[in-house]
Amino acid sequence: MHIRSTRLIPYSLPLRQQWQSSMGGFCERKGWLIELSCNNGAKGYGDCAPLQVAGTEPPEVAKQWLKEQLSATEGKSPSELLRRYTAGIPQTPAARFALETALLDLFAQSEQVTLRHWLNAKATDHVLVNAVIGTLDDSVEKRAFCKIEQGFTTLKLKVGVRSPQDELAQLHGLAQQLPEKIRLRLDANQAWSSRDAEYFIDGIRGLPIDSLEEPLREPDLKLLAKLQNRTDCSLALDESLAQLHIDKLLVDPPVKRFILKPMVIGSLLSTKKLAESAANASVECVVTTTVDSAVGVLATAQLAAAIPSSRHLAQGLATSEWLEEDIAEPLTITNGQMILPDTHGLGIGPITTA
Image (cartoon, rainbow, N blue to C red; front, side, top):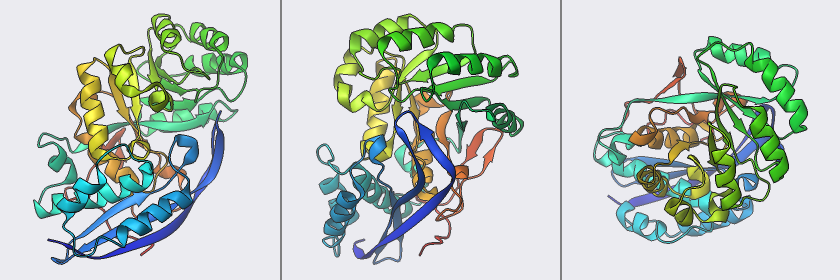
């Protein structure tokens, strides 16, 4: 099997409403779909959707790298290409994630298994996911109960957008109305000083909080450990994983949870390895997208289903409904469970941008 031809297909997907956080917001997701066609008729797909605010390379850098790499793939075997593109730390993570995904899609198809079962023979066919309900605004209660009616039990909120005092007041009001089994997952996106973080953490004591991501504007290992000891919920690191060097974090983890984004890490295989290392260090892992297209979500969901240590946690994959349109049919979610296809390889359906 060797690569016969390639395509780089641009797309622009508007959001139904602006995605907001303390780090800013965006109203559309732009990127490129990679298509690798082989001499045996198989096609592999990958999604490249750079998002600098999340930690990827700029779009123009990703596009240039992809053009250069794809121009040199004709006649090469997927195995040869995978060895070449998975060496070292990626300077273009979103682009490499896309190319690797397309290659792994081809491998799994050739072995007639789903991508998740290619990654792990004991992978599941569904993944527990959280609902993303945005910021603490005047309509948050309506959005929360809509998701609860759909069967979600973990709701994710962006905090750090307004003052800690205002957000705590509204958070308490929301929590008082929630059914007993509902948990809230909070993401501050590095919004607070150490004083504000302590104030907020003390303020959520007794609330049904699953976790709090990135509480510190300037992450510090000792301070993070101090904050984790101050609360019963899991503190989580996302954007600061690279800044604090994940290898050092695994030696003496200051928090209970890591948030892993394959589009930012640059590889499904590397993300799986990180999750395994984290599990050995007694650190929970949640795999999330960066509000990706249906192709990017599917790739990340296939990975999440292949990580056994994370099966009891809701993963951050249910973001497709934020898109006004998509490049393929989004995965079905039933009672808070994302259902994965049985199709060999990545399992993507008809591509609408092609």
